[in-house]
Image 1 (tube, rainbow, N blue to C red):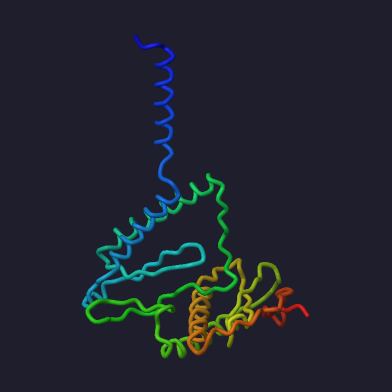
Image 2: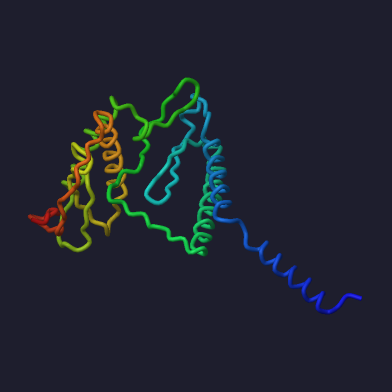
Length: 240
């Protein structure tokens, strides 16, 4: 005859085992699952024949301060969006699991807008290739950086200022990394176009500087005091 205490202990063990099973995948397992899902996206984007140049779209996947871009055939767009959703779901679950374990997750803070940007799609041998600010040749990067700088200046010069509230700034890389030009923008308006152009310019400039010589970094010692309106235009005022 089985004693009542034995039955209670057996039920307790089953309960503990059951609870452990319900805990779900670990942080590492979720990370591996997310990586596998991202590889599915990369596979979907790879090996598209040159003949389908007019049948592809450039799709973005942004994570924190970084972004990646993929060529996707029109017939695969639904599949891409599904994989993207599953990928971000896994990243969210991984983040939740990390928080549960007390792991501190640093927020993304962009001191520079410099995320990779798509430029054009070319035929590379038999397959399509996406050219971005990260893989474009230096020979092409130089004139594109000059052109993008002029486009940024056009946007900035068109800005008007009626009050100092909601104005902030970002930076453009100059001749050396760390040597910057301050650019004002109004954060209460859509600045996505400006952000993409500045990200493109800064990534190109960083690559050009690094290619020309070992990257010469100059610590930026200047500090912004405020953005003020001068003759109806926003001006970045530096501390003395």
